[in-house]
Amino acid sequence: MGLKRAYEAASARDGYRVLVERLWPRGVRKADLRLDLWLKDVAPSAALRRWFGHDPARFPEFAARYRRELQRGLAAEAFAEMMLRASEGKVTLIYAAHDQIHNGAVVLRGEIERALAAHPRPSHP
Image 1 (spheres, one colour):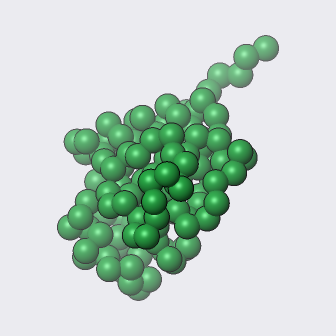
Image 2: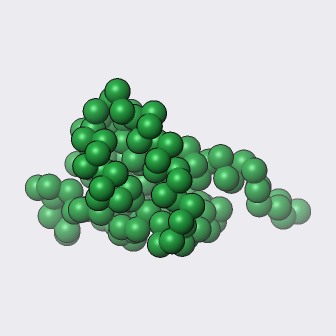
Image 3: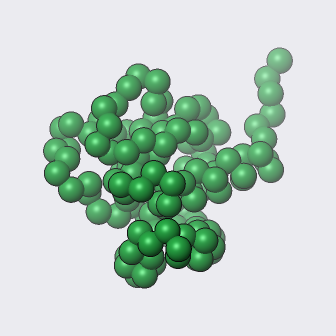
């Protein structure tokens, strides 16, 4: 499971590229951001994003609230789609935040990796 800022060049090693933001990354042309999917519903809600304001001091609470959002409604459906994609092969989550440590994509990657570890795919002989 990879993470990459929307402002970094795409690579063949990225695998399936999913934009996990509600808003299109500022200053990036759609033609330049090679995506396989834009999954808005898996991103933190607008209200949660505003509350967080990219304040690192609020990150632990942001992460907890975001995890709860991922368990409900359209976010849960989008999370299930991410799980399916991640179980099938390499996925790179594309995000726009400047802070590479305190952002929703980091939380999302952790939740996907945790869920995959709890329910590993059966290996084929």
